[in-house]
Amino acid sequence: MSNFGFLRLRVVNPYEMAFREARSAVGASALLASAEVFKSVSDAVADCTLVVGTTAVGTREVRHPVRRLEDGARIIRKRLPSSQVALLFGSERVGLSNEDLSHCHWLMRIPAREEHRSVNLGQAVAICLYELARKSTAARPAEKQKLATAGEVERVNDVLLDALRACGYLKPRSAAPTQEKVRRLVRRLHLSVSDAEAWLGMLRQILWKLRSGKGPL
Image (cartoon, rainbow, N blue to C red; front, side, top):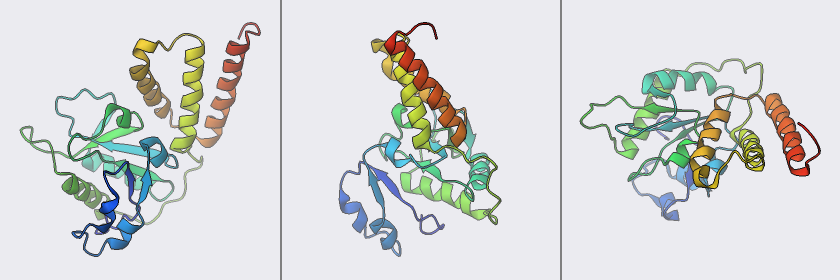
């Protein structure tokens, strides 16, 4: 990260705090010392307007758009000057879980030979950040509409799930996959801050009607 100028490291549930003292991080001790620790992916990306997951795909069934590194990097570079972007990597052993992926807007993969798709975590980070850094340009004007952060979008998602539970759509047996599907659907809306507030208002009114039984919606 330090090699390519990316200095905000966020880690979710690290195995131990000793990562801050990694001796192999020559010249990057300050980056490790300032790393932020979070209990969940949701908390780690709450202030981001674009969350991109990384995956080797392989035989795994994914429900997100998957872009090659060079195509995904082009989109990310355009967003970096005006908004917070999170690039999400999984653990060395198992990668990102379905729950982790449900927080992503889309996924990115490093082109590799079919017989050996998996790349060492540290190498994967270096390859992705190099691709982002090598064609970086001057900052562009901010987008006309300020996009909602992941935390604001998650609030819309939570109220929508409450409404789905109240009306009986969300069944206990299929709750987890349905919640992940709803989260993906909400993120594909690319809500602005004002749109997120409007959706929250409408959904809360619907939920109030459902719970109070005060006539037709």
